[in-house]
Structures are given as C-alpha cells and as structure tokens.
Image (cartoon, rainbow, N blue to C red; front, top):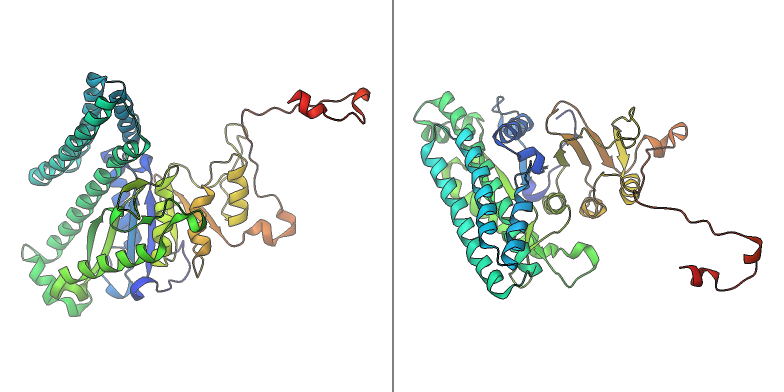
Length: 406
C-alpha cells in the first residue's frame, strides 16, 4: 500500500490494481512461488480484513528462461513449414518437459492437480500438432497460424499460477477454520473475514481488437468492457452465499486477444505489457505494475555507465522519449491506455526478485519536469548507427548532391 496513492473505486465500485509478470518472472517453479508471494503481499492476506481488500487483475506471460516457451512454439511452426517433423517433435518435447519440471516442484503433494494441469498442457500440444499438420502439408507459415500457436504459452502459465494461488489460499483457509472451511467462511461472512478467490481468464474472452482500425490502439473498448462486465457477473453469481466474504481476483493471459471476427490474434511486440494496460483502462485501476528482472527505469545503460541508477519517477513523455531513442523502458503503446483513461493511471516498473524496492513510477510529472536543477532525466542511445558528414567547398550551391550520394 505504501507504494501507491490513495485508492479510488473503479469498475463495479471496487478498487482495482493490475499486475503484470513477464517471462523472466515465471521462468520456473521458484519464480512462480516468488510471484505468488508478491501477490499475497499486495493483498496483505494475513490481515483478513474485508474493508481493506483490493481486487487484482494479474496478467501473465508465457514461461521465460532459456529457452523461452514462445520462442520454442514459433520454432515449431518454422520447422513444420519446412516439413522437419522430427525437429517439431523435439521442440514440443522441450516445451512439455519445461512445464512438467515446473509442475512436479509446485504440486508434488497434489497429484490430482498436477495430473489435471499436465492433461491441459498435453491437450494444447495435441491441438498445436493438428495445426502444424496443415502447415507441413502446405509448406506455409502464415502469420495467423504463428499467432495462434505462440499464444498457447500464456494459456498454460496463467492456469498454473491460478492453481498455485488457489491452493495457497485454500491452505490458509484450512489453517484458520479446519476441514469444514467452506461452510465456516459462509457462516462467518458477517465477521469481515475475507477469502481470496483466484479466477483464470482467457483474455480472448475479453480483449477485442479491430485489426482494421488505426486510432485508439485498435482496441474495441465498448465490446471489451462489456465482455468483462458479463464475466465478472458470472463469477460473482458462482459465489452464492459466500459472495459477501469473498474477493475475486483474475489471473489473465497476456499477449493474446480476439478480433472482431472472433479469430484469435496476438498483441505483437510487448503484447503482455499492452494486455495489462488494456485491463487497467477497462477496470479504471489505481495502478499498473509491470514486474520484471530489473529494478526500474535506469538513468543510463549500465553496460556503458556503471554508476547508472534507478530513477524513482519518470513522466509519460520522458518514458516515451527514452524508449524512442533506444532505452528498454516500456513500449509507448503500453502507456496509451493509461494516459487516455480518466483518471490517468500511474505505471510502476518493479523487480520481481527485489519486491521491497519501490522501482520507478511513470505518471504525469516527475522531478525533472518540476525542478529546474534536475532537468536531465536519463541518457539513451541507438545502436548500429553512423553519422556521414559530406563536406567540401565544391559542394556549395550544387543541387542534387544528396540524391547522387544516397
């Protein structure tokens, strides 16, 4: 709570926060556990006070690390287009093994849950094989097919995180109420005890894209907001008598969406960050926090400037300028929903592996825009560029020189 401003009610009259975890944050079992700790810390689950609870929307990328799941899936499409069936199976085998190892560590004592998740992943891999048969027969690597296949990683990681958070939430409930926990929660709903319920959401049920549109990020906002409202009502209805003592949180797939024709698409580069920003605007969230493997926005490239430090705050304009000139800050497209929302939403960049560090706040203003003695925000550079200086007294007044040179 100390990192954020006073909470303002948004969608449905609830106070929302959006958190996004990238591939490095869910690279393996230990990373998933760290993410679960961060989410529980944000909710302050030990307090059990309903009046202070916040609803979360958590956007998740595919498992990262080496190799990244998304890269493996795209490689499978590439091998299928050249009819390298053995390489396709090899790649898909690595994908399955990566998830199996993660599930074995996370759900060692829950064989049933582990089996369910493995069957879910296995079913997805079977679907991918069916899709790749078409690719192989036609020797055709269509962009649409690559988008569909590459989006499976987010479907799997978000369901794994949902299952992990549910288990930990249920374990806390068992410790508090014993084996008859569900009925006890209902009976004590008037005592302000809060149970955190985590719901998996395939973003293709919510985020709708108009691929022909140029303005407003191509997001069909009315349709997307309407779909989430319907989903939220359905999940609230499922709670029944426990509704008053349960707080809903949504674990949402990043990167994937659906177009106006009902066809699965992706949000392209930095898609999961964009997913988080879209959900932030839909929910009118109090903040959007992007968790990654760096401590925030740096004042310079640490490989070139060893004394570079994390900037505590950066304005939207400064962040866009730094990104445009090569800094790996945040894609300008990600900021668009936050800026266009009313009220505008601050974006935080924080380190998954240093959760106590406040990171960087990106919002309307920063110290450099308010204090004249701190006019420089940071330095960035664009690699692989050269400056060509053409000069000479014989060039003065001569027309067409640029055309002949370039």
